[in-house]
Length: 237
Image (cartoon, rainbow, N blue to C red; front, top):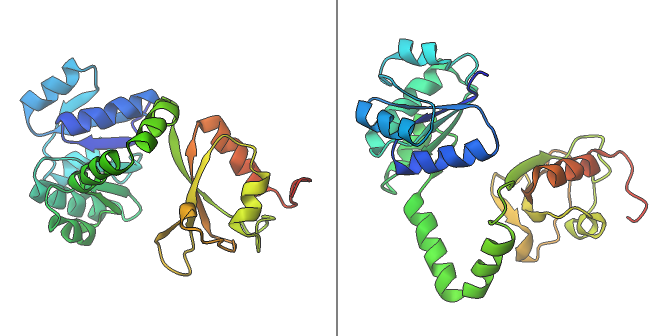
């Protein structure tokens, strides 16, 4: 099976990402220029190989610009991730690129280099520590009920132009949701790319091309996708 994703960097963070991709049986390959790190990843049971990420021909040989759909820039150095993002974007304008930054100042550079999303692990860790201090009971509940599931996915579902949800408010959608999902919120692309969290109390009026963001098991997400794709509302609506 051809790899769909390429994880650059064989450090502990990348190996953790690889473990989670393995749970969902997503085809991927791990890559690094450091032979020792590649060997570490192989000992963890990962498909890993050494590569010169600065060589465009090596990236093409990997499948960038062909069958590779997404690239994770997970090197420990921001400069390496910036270089990789520039090279990968030049080879494939449609490629999905996610990069991790070590310093907050590197985030805009990575976005300018072509990354679609930039993840700051320190910001995420800081927010998690804050939640643990302020609301430990909520965090414990989430870990036991949601994050304890192996089949846990985040999905972005675009409302098609034939959907019954056009003009319906978020509260109306929740009333007919029978799926065991968490509805995080909605992205209204006409107003920007920010997520309108459902917990903010904003009863957003849905429209065509709005993006619903949900968390849950794959089967539940597929069921919810079918609900969104209906031309007529369910009888309980």
